Length: 294
Image (cartoon, rainbow, N blue to C red):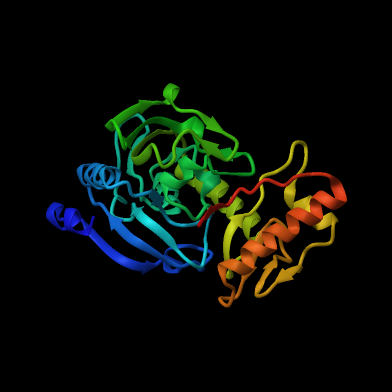
């Protein structure tokens, strides 16, 4: 695989620690971390991995991800070089999958484009936000999506219109078989000052209700039907509950946080312990929202 990437002039590193690329800050190395800078490079990397029978995973900003201590075998495609975005006509934005979502939100607000300001605090890439159909409170990205360019291992580059994409609660039809490279959003127009006021209010509320200044992967569990996972865990008295150096946040019980000393095994054990406790006390099976890589 390394020879193929060298021949294609595609940037990569071997046995690269992935803890540096996630907001949780834990996890072992990628066997091969590939950083394509164009769609063609992404296609080539995926095709070569397919031909060699190597598993492929896609890494954006690493904000909803737990990587185990042993790391990941095979190929990890990192979208960090596909980070540019441009503004077009009629409220359209063309963005690479690796574009930093909060940066994109703020740039759109300055141009008087409304629709994504509710996601200003989501610390992911636009590709990750779409893949997870990330949201915050009343905000969801899916209504603003107009078109997405993806790469399929078997079909190469594909352009998908909104109607061809399935968005579900905190998930979508994207993933390892459909790797996002570029996104087109279409937003509404409004006064920049009005959008900024709403954006600032979203950030104030987020800082009041979610942990800041500590390592975290965001919400760990999906909300059960008719229930908030955070409120459920709070009612069970789980704030502060810990395994090793990983603990349930005292600010929001659906966040697992640490001060830089935890290992992925601590976080995984804490997730399992919480699921078992909740099942025993409430008969509710909590489903993970955070992705886990072995």
